[in-house]
Figure (cartoon, rainbow, N blue to C red):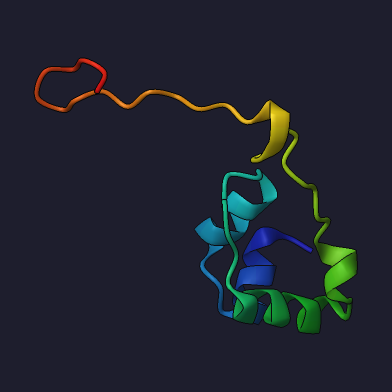
Length: 76
């Protein structure tokens, strides 16, 4: 199925579908996922794969960066 046809059947903008295809998008609307699954007759699990972040956000691998002062550009 083409992106154009999927757009027509789901009512989702063609540009949005193209961005998903090229993995440019950070988030998806649940209603869009539902529409795509309905049109393609598939489950969410068949459509989307969860890949956790590679860098832990806590623990010994936590990276803390100093934020500079906006006026001077120097660290606080």
